[in-house]
Length: 382
Ligand code: FES
Ligand SMILES: [Fe+2]
Image (cartoon, rainbow, N blue to C red; front, side, top):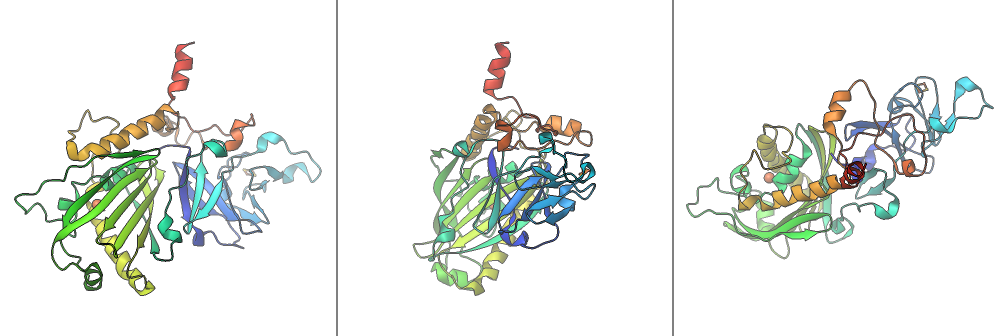
């Protein structure tokens, strides 16, 4: 799991204006409280109260603030404690009571939270989904929770060889004697790798979708798959010029072996909302085929090297994705889950927020990170 990326905390519709209580969400193994302030803007703070560990996500919303259910300490959306009842109304509230608060952006009907301490100008962007703002396209959102390391799913999406066997909906279970994956070159971009390929696929099962595709027989389909950050993927299925399906999968690890994902499924045909159900059912069905192979993978955690695996050319994008992850690890962004697991139930950590770069003195420790290259060099230099 990596800090310093934007993660989806919820769908916009799940954070209700005027609610009495915040929404409690777990991401990257830590808990957070989210609510809408009096202007309707979403605020997100670390769930653990700096007093004696009360869960703010179980507290109450008071105006623009959240109130701890234990002794009523009240925090604004910046993480400042603005009321500390046991000291009385005129007391000066110590600065160190402050908790971490995180940047929030609502986009594509999703609530994106920046979980890290980078200043604004250095942050990776939110994945671009231009189809969502295009009136020629229609999009739907679907979400689920799977018992996997989210990276297993990212690697599955950029694996062109799994379609033939995992998905009888768009493969032939290896029944073709001449089956072989097409060769491909990787296209590397700043925040991820990808490839464009073509795939021989059976006709779509749903009659209306089949008619829209204009293909009644097995046919070659142009496509593309790729990653964005450690936790997002894109898939293009371009049946023809008029019928394209572009899917975006945004993963939010609840913890290292539990993945909440949000699928933004966009299409350039069958735009009438009455087709939403059909498209959603197809997505759910295909996802169930992936889930069938992914949840039993052993080990649960995605290997960090291929030492105990045997990669082949069709796994090229997966190997490259791991290199990107290694680069983010070298920046010092990878959470040390071994330490996290060792300290579970003893230490409440928090994801470091941007304010930690400016202010010293925080009650909760920041999550342990695997030392990046800079830290290692400093240590070596003594
Ligand atoms: S633990 Fe939150 S106010 Fe005491
Ligand atoms: Fe798949």
